[in-house]
Length: 180
Image (tube, rainbow, N blue to C red; front, side, top):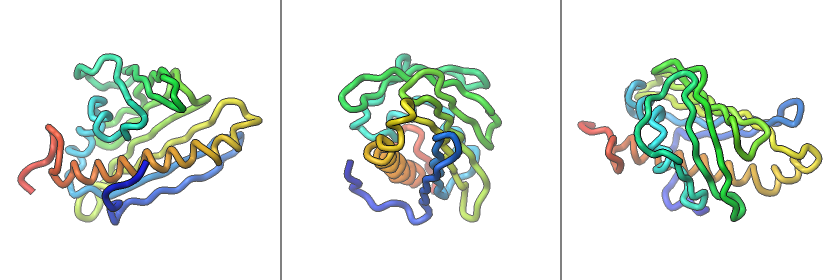
Protein backbone atom coordinates (compact mmCIF):
# COMPACT_ATOMS: atom_id res chain seq x y z
CA UNK A 1 0.00 0.00 0.00
CA UNK A 2 2.87 2.37 -0.65
CA UNK A 3 2.61 5.45 -2.79
CA UNK A 4 5.30 5.61 -5.49
CA UNK A 5 4.42 9.08 -6.79
CA UNK A 6 3.74 12.29 -4.93
CA UNK A 7 0.12 13.24 -4.30
CA UNK A 8 -1.21 16.05 -6.49
CA UNK A 9 -0.92 19.48 -4.86
CA UNK A 10 -4.67 20.04 -5.13
CA UNK A 11 -5.62 16.73 -3.45
CA UNK A 12 -7.43 16.91 -0.12
CA UNK A 13 -9.00 14.19 2.00
CA UNK A 14 -10.97 14.30 5.25
CA UNK A 15 -12.93 11.85 7.39
CA UNK A 16 -15.84 12.69 9.68
CA UNK A 17 -18.01 10.77 12.08
CA UNK A 18 -21.76 11.20 11.63
CA UNK A 19 -24.76 10.32 13.77
CA UNK A 20 -25.89 6.72 14.00
CA UNK A 21 -22.44 5.19 13.46
CA UNK A 22 -22.13 6.49 9.91
CA UNK A 23 -18.92 8.01 8.56
CA UNK A 24 -18.08 10.34 5.71
CA UNK A 25 -14.99 10.61 3.55
CA UNK A 26 -14.54 13.62 1.31
CA UNK A 27 -11.69 13.70 -1.19
CA UNK A 28 -11.12 16.29 -3.90
CA UNK A 29 -8.62 17.38 -6.47
CA UNK A 30 -8.47 19.71 -9.46
CA UNK A 31 -7.90 18.22 -12.90
CA UNK A 32 -6.68 20.39 -15.76
CA UNK A 33 -9.49 19.10 -17.99
CA UNK A 34 -12.94 20.29 -19.02
CA UNK A 35 -15.74 18.97 -16.83
CA UNK A 36 -17.27 16.88 -19.63
CA UNK A 37 -13.99 15.00 -20.17
CA UNK A 38 -13.56 14.29 -16.44
CA UNK A 39 -17.18 13.19 -16.06
CA UNK A 40 -16.90 10.92 -19.11
CA UNK A 41 -13.94 9.10 -17.61
CA UNK A 42 -15.68 8.45 -14.30
CA UNK A 43 -19.02 7.38 -15.70
CA UNK A 44 -17.34 4.48 -17.53
CA UNK A 45 -17.14 1.71 -14.90
CA UNK A 46 -14.34 -0.03 -16.82
CA UNK A 47 -11.98 2.76 -15.75
CA UNK A 48 -12.27 1.56 -12.15
CA UNK A 49 -9.67 -1.11 -12.99
CA UNK A 50 -7.04 1.55 -13.60
CA UNK A 51 -7.70 3.67 -10.52
CA UNK A 52 -8.21 0.91 -7.93
CA UNK A 53 -5.18 -0.39 -6.01
CA UNK A 54 -4.03 -3.85 -7.14
CA UNK A 55 -4.27 -5.27 -3.60
CA UNK A 56 -8.09 -4.97 -3.79
CA UNK A 57 -8.07 -7.33 -6.81
CA UNK A 58 -11.05 -5.46 -8.25
CA UNK A 59 -13.01 -7.44 -10.85
CA UNK A 60 -16.04 -6.47 -12.84
CA UNK A 61 -18.42 -9.37 -13.50
CA UNK A 62 -19.14 -8.16 -17.05
CA UNK A 63 -16.35 -5.82 -18.18
CA UNK A 64 -17.97 -4.90 -21.53
CA UNK A 65 -19.03 -1.27 -21.93
CA UNK A 66 -22.54 -0.78 -20.65
CA UNK A 67 -24.49 2.45 -20.74
CA UNK A 68 -24.64 4.37 -17.51
CA UNK A 69 -28.04 5.77 -16.60
CA UNK A 70 -30.25 6.34 -13.58
CA UNK A 71 -30.88 2.91 -12.05
CA UNK A 72 -28.14 1.01 -13.94
CA UNK A 73 -26.57 -1.75 -11.82
CA UNK A 74 -23.05 -3.16 -11.96
CA UNK A 75 -21.57 -6.26 -10.28
CA UNK A 76 -17.99 -6.42 -9.02
CA UNK A 77 -15.89 -8.40 -6.61
CA UNK A 78 -13.08 -7.17 -4.39
CA UNK A 79 -10.63 -9.00 -2.18
CA UNK A 80 -10.67 -7.90 1.43
CA UNK A 81 -8.60 -9.60 4.13
CA UNK A 82 -8.12 -12.54 1.78
CA UNK A 83 -11.83 -13.01 1.06
CA UNK A 84 -13.49 -12.46 -2.32
CA UNK A 85 -16.52 -10.25 -1.64
CA UNK A 86 -19.33 -9.50 -4.11
CA UNK A 87 -20.36 -5.88 -4.61
CA UNK A 88 -23.35 -4.60 -6.58
CA UNK A 89 -23.87 -0.89 -7.09
CA UNK A 90 -26.75 1.09 -8.53
CA UNK A 91 -26.35 4.45 -10.24
CA UNK A 92 -28.51 7.21 -8.84
CA UNK A 93 -28.70 10.99 -8.97
CA UNK A 94 -27.26 10.79 -12.51
CA UNK A 95 -26.84 14.35 -13.86
CA UNK A 96 -24.14 14.58 -16.54
CA UNK A 97 -21.71 16.34 -16.47
CA UNK A 98 -22.28 17.46 -12.87
CA UNK A 99 -22.65 14.39 -10.68
CA UNK A 100 -23.73 10.83 -10.12
CA UNK A 101 -23.74 8.46 -7.18
CA UNK A 102 -23.21 4.77 -6.84
CA UNK A 103 -25.15 3.15 -4.04
CA UNK A 104 -24.06 -0.25 -2.73
CA UNK A 105 -26.98 -2.65 -3.19
CA UNK A 106 -24.96 -5.66 -2.00
CA UNK A 107 -21.51 -5.66 -0.46
CA UNK A 108 -19.40 -5.48 2.67
CA UNK A 109 -20.85 -2.28 4.12
CA UNK A 110 -24.14 -1.86 5.91
CA UNK A 111 -24.48 1.34 3.86
CA UNK A 112 -22.27 2.88 1.14
CA UNK A 113 -23.09 5.82 -1.11
CA UNK A 114 -20.35 7.36 -3.25
CA UNK A 115 -21.26 10.72 -4.78
CA UNK A 116 -19.01 11.92 -7.62
CA UNK A 117 -19.26 15.70 -8.14
CA UNK A 118 -17.67 17.75 -10.94
CA UNK A 119 -17.56 21.55 -10.86
CA UNK A 120 -15.71 24.13 -12.90
CA UNK A 121 -12.60 25.42 -11.17
CA UNK A 122 -9.77 27.74 -12.09
CA UNK A 123 -7.59 25.73 -14.45
CA UNK A 124 -10.03 22.90 -15.01
CA UNK A 125 -12.48 20.76 -13.04
CA UNK A 126 -12.76 20.13 -9.32
CA UNK A 127 -13.60 16.48 -8.83
CA UNK A 128 -15.03 15.62 -5.42
CA UNK A 129 -15.77 12.21 -3.96
CA UNK A 130 -18.17 12.17 -1.03
CA UNK A 131 -18.55 8.72 0.48
CA UNK A 132 -21.07 8.14 3.25
CA UNK A 133 -20.76 4.69 4.77
CA UNK A 134 -21.69 2.58 7.77
CA UNK A 135 -20.00 -0.65 8.78
CA UNK A 136 -21.95 -3.72 9.87
CA UNK A 137 -21.75 -5.06 13.43
CA UNK A 138 -22.32 -1.82 15.33
CA UNK A 139 -20.54 -2.97 18.50
CA UNK A 140 -17.28 -3.68 16.64
CA UNK A 141 -17.52 -1.08 13.89
CA UNK A 142 -15.64 1.72 15.71
CA UNK A 143 -12.69 -0.57 16.40
CA UNK A 144 -12.67 -2.08 12.88
CA UNK A 145 -12.90 1.40 11.37
CA UNK A 146 -10.06 2.76 13.47
CA UNK A 147 -7.75 -0.25 12.97
CA UNK A 148 -8.47 -1.24 9.36
CA UNK A 149 -11.13 0.51 7.29
CA UNK A 150 -10.09 4.16 7.69
CA UNK A 151 -6.49 3.36 6.73
CA UNK A 152 -7.58 1.25 3.74
CA UNK A 153 -9.94 3.96 2.46
CA UNK A 154 -7.16 6.53 2.85
CA UNK A 155 -4.84 4.34 0.73
CA UNK A 156 -7.53 3.66 -1.87
CA UNK A 157 -8.32 7.34 -2.36
CA UNK A 158 -4.69 8.52 -2.37
CA UNK A 159 -3.88 5.80 -4.93
CA UNK A 160 -6.83 7.02 -7.02
CA UNK A 161 -5.65 10.62 -6.76
CA UNK A 162 -2.22 9.79 -8.16
CA UNK A 163 -3.64 7.59 -10.95
CA UNK A 164 -6.29 10.16 -11.89
CA UNK A 165 -3.70 12.91 -11.97
CA UNK A 166 -1.52 10.80 -14.29
CA UNK A 167 -4.49 10.11 -16.57
CA UNK A 168 -5.44 13.81 -16.67
CA UNK A 169 -1.86 14.65 -17.63
CA UNK A 170 -2.04 12.17 -20.52
CA UNK A 171 0.43 9.72 -18.99
CA UNK A 172 -1.67 6.57 -19.44
CA UNK A 173 -4.93 5.12 -20.61
CA UNK A 174 -6.83 4.57 -23.84
CA UNK A 175 -8.90 7.64 -23.05
CA UNK A 176 -5.95 9.76 -21.95
CA UNK A 177 -6.49 13.42 -22.83
CA UNK A 178 -4.39 14.63 -25.73
CA UNK A 179 -3.41 17.94 -27.20
CA UNK A 180 -2.51 19.54 -23.90
